[in-house]
Length: 151
Image (cartoon, rainbow, N blue to C red; front, side):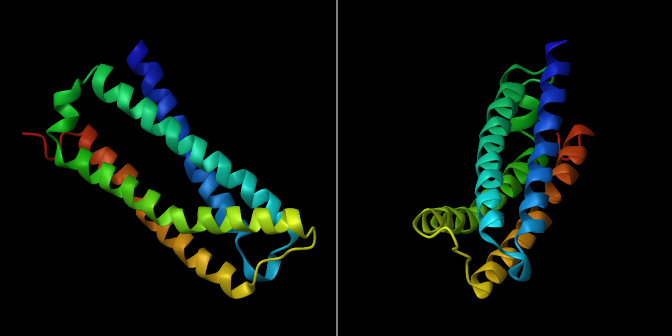
């Protein structure tokens, strides 16, 4: 039963991450940026960070205490491909997170602050790359669950 709970929690957090990333991407549009949007982006980005930490914690518990056992995961190249994709998404998210934090600071100093359209456009392209790499994670997970790469 605990494996079912861990698997369910793992999937719900992943869906939460996807939803938050999609919401951030929808908000990150040069023509639609406003002080309210900047505030909302800060909240979504904080949620994204918390969910990322939660998925690492729950995923770690699944690896070490789940029904399949650590050997199933640690010896499977699809697991490591999934981890690499997650790491790549994390690396891609650094710049948007730093810029959104800087915007939050600027907004506190000036309630009418709106980021430059060029800056928003650059971050949107990075976030699109995040979405594309993020899409690889469930593909690798499905392959892993079916024993692809497991010897």
